[in-house]
Image (tube, rainbow, N blue to C red; front, side):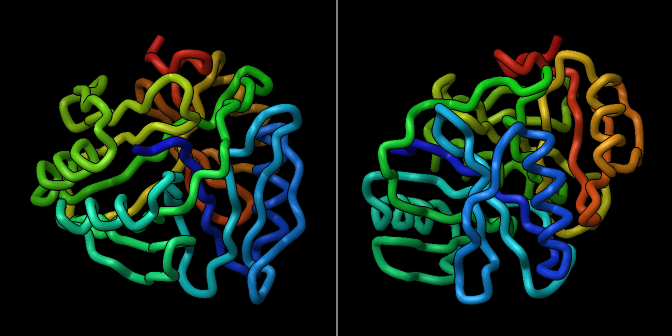
Length: 242
């Protein structure tokens, strides 16, 4: 049912320019013309391939990340999501339905417009994963929701608190679910797969990112617009942990 996936970088509207400069540089893309009533949206364009990353300036809060799921039948996907426990946040007809998963992660159903060419690896990295942090009590239901909605296999990750909702190889973004051991609300961030995580960290710091924390297979960073993301030790071509 899902023909393409867009990952959204959601950042405070007043820091749109900082976010745009950083994310275009780290992904080897260029920024489209801004659109929306307040110029709050833009697409990061990939030369010779189809875009899979967009930027949104949000009016309130620190932002985060979300997915647009591109399908041939927007209403069918939205209906299926509601059957599985999602709620509708906004319905603009066949062009856009904004939803929230059972645990509260927002996402959108949008029309597929023939996208099929996944962007190439850039500077040894590929932005290829949305990580959803889910409170422990909601984790199993959230896992069942995303597996049921996408129809993609759900795999155990590198640690027991992770589940990977693995997209087909031709799609640009997959979903990682992370079970939290504290009562934080559900949220999401983006992950890069990196051939050389240390080199990627240095390159991102040169572009204005700040180191936050180091873990066994991932490095937490903060971009110039204040949002967190991760550099992971996964193969940027396959997405598998090296």
